[in-house]
Length: 417
Image (cartoon, rainbow, N blue to C red; front, top):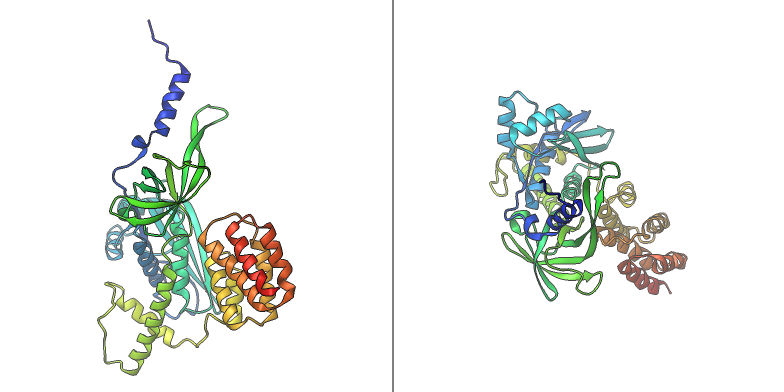
């Protein structure tokens, strides 16, 4: 006689498997393997024809610094592709992406283009999933100055990295402290925020009845306080209800809380400019310090090109306007700082700040870049001394669903009253 297994029992077993932290936790975190191809040049008038190679080098450096990925060394990448007679540069199609990725053992490929139209340079990047030959995400940045271009590339790489959130599990909880199964090997750094989730209802396909996902219910937010090789300690910043965060729950990194690489590259740009000035004064002297293997010649060419560019800065009105209206919150924050320093009495900029704040305040996001940008805009209006912006700050303080932003708005409202 055949034994009948109840469908309810089968579903119960599946649910237990989904909810079991032991079965879901991986003892070894495997980094995503990425290949960065040279970027294709489009347009005329580039300071150097190696710009596509240089942009790829910048991407590679920024991604390696994140600690999140295994990046194929570019010298080896070129050698392997040459052997297979495959292109190192340009925007690859689906078939080529799959062929390159499988040959290199990479799960993801980053490719794109550098376009120039008059004095505007635009970089477009695409993240391609090798297995499906589909574009996971696409980002682009624009700049009217070559000097600031590296900063923008790093910002773009930060945005690309957020398309690969770190996910793990809580393996221990003691009071307001928790331990997660992700550490240095996974790219976790002190100060990173993670959202915590418990698993809810099973989501089934309405036609087939197959289980296609499990609902995630947020239980709180944690901040990393110390990191070891395979685990990290964190403190609980917020819980939706008392003791809602517990052992075995899923954690996922919060977008926008990666290491602020932009500040480092700004310093690097200044060092680069000093190096260019020094080399033009005494071309016979050569420096060995700070040279990255395989990239010295490329950066030397770029440095020579930069020295011949007119001294147009990123603080020009047009650049500040573009940054203020950018969808990138780091750009908005930087624009607010520049306006507060150089254009604090300019009615045109103050009105634009007022407009951007009214368009962006109505969000409950806890993203650090978003809050910094909105806080910066509040600060500009608060420092203006103009009563006409009182109504805007009142609207933000009374209507924003974000408590932190509400505090920023109230603080600056008091400065105008």
